[in-house]
Length: 140
Ligand SMILES: [Cu+2]
Image (cartoon, rainbow, N blue to C red; front, side):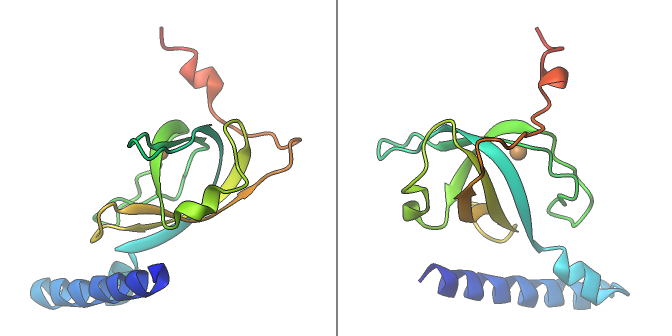
């Protein structure tokens, strides 16, 4: 069900990109089309589990250096704590607050929300994450 939705929105992105490219006569259609939908593998630590009362899933994640914005331009994301949406609520079944995780996000700027977690798995307790604490400690 979810994959069918993503397949459809994926094709929508391709069609929209093609329409935009035809409209402006962009010389590099292949790279520009790919810019609309990306996926990234990210590591982080679960800070808050979502609830039915609307509390979001919060993950403190490592930097995403190859992140691109809605225009396909490089927009590296620093390490931060932010809310995420799950493609499937059951993904978190064996995970808890404090668990270190690796997760795959897909970013489709034509969807809402644009960023969705497609899969997530626990990392070994010995994992050392780079969460940018030294940078964060500079703020008051
Ligand atoms: Cu972020």
